[in-house]
Image (tube, rainbow, N blue to C red; front, side):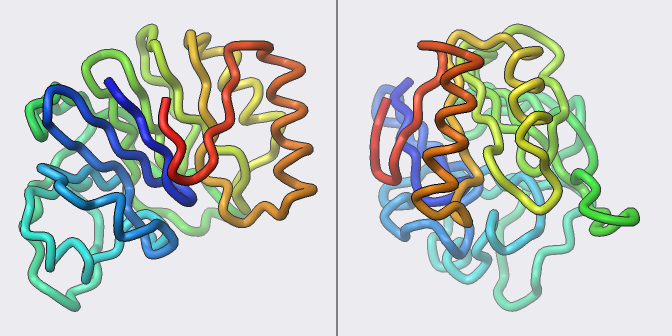
Length: 201
């Protein structure tokens, strides 16, 4: 699978002419969706889903059953829940997890699913819910108001993927990004690879 990272938590997966996009939010580039066959949305927050953009796209969108997506435009959504196995853009997908990580005092509390694609790549959304099986590539949240860096590093170590790529990093300035990359790299070694927006692995 060819993986292209876009700004923040958006990732594009391509294989044999099929295109699956995960979490194209309002901070990600519109070009991430060019030629997309299907979209996976981990949860309802706008940094992970741009409803207007997806409504205009007209492709299959998969989102948590309990997600409260803004009713600003009709969206062809297939609702899924943890444990569901389905096909999106020809890719085998398993939904895992259930809830968004707590920011403070129980807020926000919304549905959040991680997606395991082809038993190989895992996107946890806004959580550190483990995939429950070995994976080749882990997309690890690098920074968030709900996250401590040590938690993200421990999560990446516990999942023990062959390759770890940071996501959820749009609020980091250059100094912060250098620090995050330094800590991940020191801990995970050559398994860790930072991808700039638009870069492909």
